[in-house]
Length: 77
Image 1 (cartoon, rainbow, N blue to C red):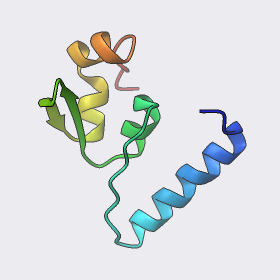
Image 2 (image 1 turned 135 degrees about the vertical axis):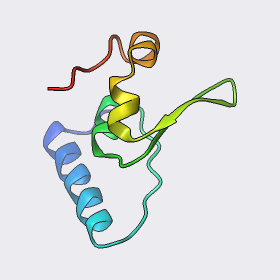
Image 3 (image 1 turned 90 degrees about the vertical axis):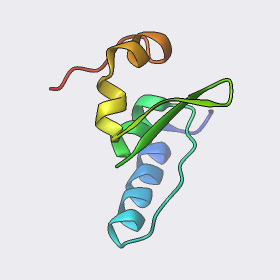
């Protein structure tokens, strides 16, 4: 919150580069869409329990999770 958009973009680019170099990263992100787009694996928790787990894309495109947490699922495009 409150970080300039250009800085957010650079942060995500840096995280992606570190990951490409072989380092595993645990990202806890308020912006679920952005985090899931970057993630190889995503987990959605509700009340301390795993609600959904899968690839970042699977979680991002899941209609139930999209409707509940993301304001609608993201299309495959």
